[in-house]
Length: 310
Image: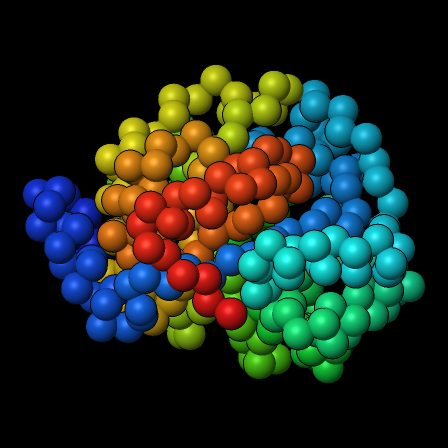
């Protein structure tokens, strides 16, 4: 078990010392020149009853994102095929809402998972809170990863969301892990939280009974109408420090630079890779926000001699 005080000391190491330690841990556990690429598709968008202050899909925010009903199987498979052609090895399907209340829609997503799996891609889904029965059904369908972010520290959580607790999130994570599905769980930085909150979030994840297989770190993308669109952005060096601390605390986990990567310079991304980041989203759209344009990553990977994990 890692304590908050221990982790905070590490986070505040001199910058180059922190990166050196993180890099050494990274190369002991992974190929330093390889990066795993995922694609994500919103298979059901908008109309969410939750009040997540950062999200465009919440009906409690003033964003007015159009509701999109569940996509048909062919549309999903076309997107998965294009993702594979771009080098993605994992395809994630996201459905808005607190949970999957429609059994018919849940069954349809299970069919999507089976079909994407048959294409030779790893599968990932994010469907909100789950029951044990639902987790078992997803496992039977061939789901490899379930994304369920804790978002922020337990202490800051109530400032961001009031319609669920962080314990609700942890419960679903434990249900998913007990079903034998890998967990992809991380958070968002730049919502008004402190560096101490960011460290506490990583300590929470590192101290789970089973550490996450993948830890996505999202840099807040400010969306007009959300309740955190005026928060101060995270400093790039602090962002790199968070990546490094995630690598140190969770040596065997993939550390993913997720949303907001299009606001990071090539040099900052290179520092993140050196500090232990080894996973990315490649799609031009991450649910309702923009990601990097097609071809931009290939240029950066060529400069850094980075290979894609098949």
